[in-house]
Image (cartoon, rainbow, N blue to C red):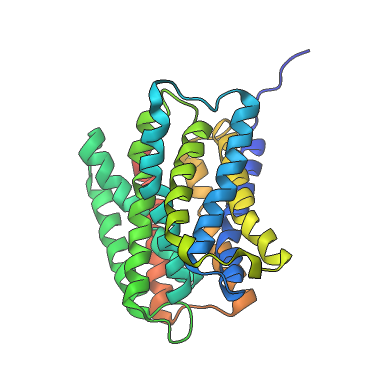
Amino acid sequence: MLQQTPSLADGMFWILLTAVLWSFLGLMSKYCLVAGMTPLECAFFRALFGCLAFAVHCAYMGLLHMPGRKEALFMFFGMWGIGCYFAFAQLTIKYCGAAMDIILQYTAPFWVAIFAWRFFGERLNSVKLVAIGVATLGTICVCCSGGSIPDGFSPLGIATGLASGLCYATHYPFIRYWQKRYPSSVIFTWMLAGGALLLFLLVLPNLHCQTFPPSVWAVSAATGVVCTYLAFICYGMALQRISLVRAVVTSELEPVLSMFWVWLAFNESFSFLGWIGSVCIVFSVLVLTVSRSG
């Protein structure tokens, strides 16, 4: 029997599914926060459930163990790249709104461009510099808009939103270096373990798991299993079938869907200035992505 070659249509299906799965994260996190979870508890349970899902996957594939005691290295980086990243994102959702968090996380590609220039020798051409400048203007507009919830202007929320983008951007050089030696699923298993450990230590003094109803537990688990583990698996399937540029450009559907869900469920929306800034950031990401393909 002839083996079928993966088609473009298959790849587009997987990347669209990835964007949809990612887009539910803000909505689910907001639901847990409204139900009484603290931002750090939301971050902890996302890391915990995501880690368990990846660990089961890797154990089934016989890939869980890493030679040379690299588990400790990946856990240490995970304390920053996962623990701090998840915590910053949840704090932004609480203080400035889920839509604000989504947009500020999209500053990550511009940190990535700087990292790629500094550590991997990628040239910052004029198109990239213009894209970074437009994104910076957009970020200023979003920050000055006050957030996506009424009376949502919070310097702390803005700071954590920008920090979440920086945390996420550091995944790029770290994972790019190590995935030449280890499967990405193994890397994420131990990164999530390190993040979960840090967050557990932070939430332990005030952890109140017994007060949450089953529906909140189900949604909390879904942030780790659906929005983290399954989304990553779908993303990997997409990259086997389509180019990275096509995948990244198509996944720009995520912030549009994310903001639609939180508007529909919680009536979150930006002011006019915030929408102008959001368009600048998303447009600049698209330009930067296409530019990096050259």
